[in-house]
Length: 215
Image 1 (cartoon, rainbow, N blue to C red):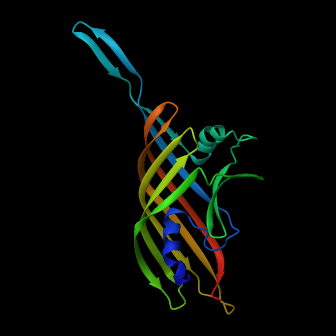
Image 2 (image 1 turned 90 degrees about the vertical axis):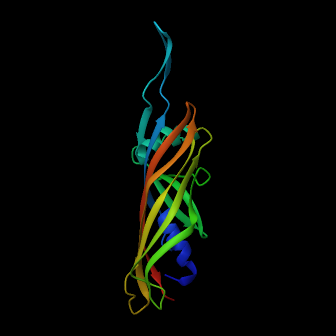
Image 3 (image 1 turned 180 degrees about the horizontal axis):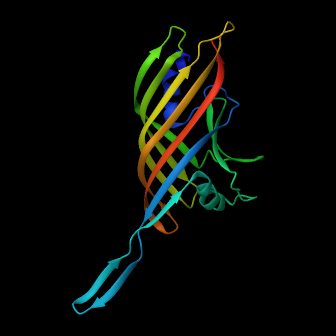
């Protein structure tokens, strides 16, 4: 790990599931999202007047593919529709993070819809060698905020993220393998959809692995 990218890599490891410097690589991210929306409201007459009866909230849980197929795809008018093989991916082009839906050979850029933003405060622990390698690993703690807005559904959820970066011992040519694993747990927030406002919880996780060089 080069010192110049230490902070951004740790932040990305936790919050953007960074591409480990294997820039052409697409890494896949797993999303679990649960929404809680106000149930129906009924006015019921009784001997003492009119009671207001609130039904239990409407609770919907989405896996990654369910969210892509039932929310994202229809809202952006995906053609052809996304299949059950669709995945949420992330890559980097000229050091700019790109979010994608990868469905076989069908790749759709959704960078303008999805973003993950790290907090300014990061807690880092571990050992960085004189070659700026994470040996055996460096761990980062950070708040990560997932923001989503497709024009019909929008939400923002925030949680505490943990990311680890580990590097192998370089070979004689200076080549080593860097592995990044990251999860943002217990994300909470709120949003809106055509049925009105909702509360939300979420979990986001991902990993990447790529070969780097000291030179």
